[in-house]
Image (tube, rainbow, N blue to C red; front, side):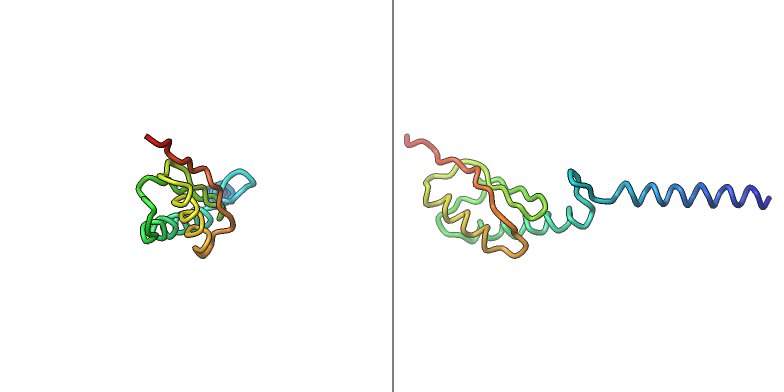
Length: 107
């Protein structure tokens, strides 16, 4: 009985250790806390874009990875892209902003 209990405890300890390692961040994968932080930054940037006059926030895609925000999509003018870029840079938690937005061709 004692041997069985020791075996069960060893298996549980190994499972907990493996689970902890699986959630740990690596150079190519975020940890749980980083993912939550990035989700919050994304939400704050989207809110800033909505509040920015002259920016159609629904046409701009926002993605965040380790504090680096990527803005993509099509905007009506270079001025709208500049406003969106500026608004994103002002959000707390943003380390840098990548501008992948494209200006729509004139019709």
